Image 1 (cartoon, each protein chain N blue to C red):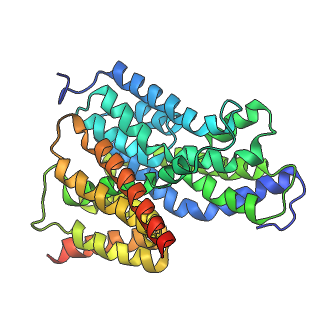
Image 2: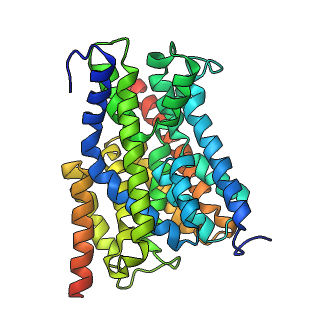
Length: 112
Length: 238
């Protein structure tokens, strides 16, 4: 098994290029003339849920498992993230969310 | 925003002008990506060219995280590709405005079609009078983002080691994503997608081969589709 063994330099370049080609095709194919002009509404709706469904797992694991281990004890990222969600909801601003979240994390880490 | 941009140059400049404010959020993200790329064990060249070849923030972050934790190639590729699936939706949405262009133009604009460029240019396409040179607006937003993304990636690669750990800059990544998805949560199926994918990720995080991300993503999408069907059926029966 190749798990936990780092990929070789060559394989990493291969991975970058393959991911790049697939991502480019994802963006270009709908603009090409090979694709039907209308895609089924159900597919369009399902694609609309992709951001929420892929970004949430990344957010949750970055907050709850910052070092790959589940940690709630003394985890300052959790309260900072919760406040950031409230700020994001109220302001809708990426910059304000970033600044308040990072600021709070620094403040909590400094105080506690 | 210009009301009646009638030629190529003014469309292009309007695109740049409309895109610039977003760079306040893009620059720190690229910076953090550059730093994280080096920390994950990628070379400076690999980190930089990820920004060129993949050109998608969230997918690049996941790429380096999965690489660092020794994920098999097929799982890595499937996970990264799933994250970028949403871009197909942008293509579908703008294709009616770009169909008539020569294929070279469509290749360039397809390559540049990221979240931030789409979000700004679709407003120009839909909310302002059509013009023959509208595509220059998307070229403007796309190139602005492309330049800023490469500049910030390079800064992150160069500064990486000098930025102290206690700043915990990596926290900027989940914060950016929080800012992106929170406004979506007012729609019920989106909320379901968030809750189900988040819970699945936490439960499955120990899975071998880092399969948790792709499973959590599909669980979230399927749950949202079901939730949406159930609510629309309810609405019809009322």
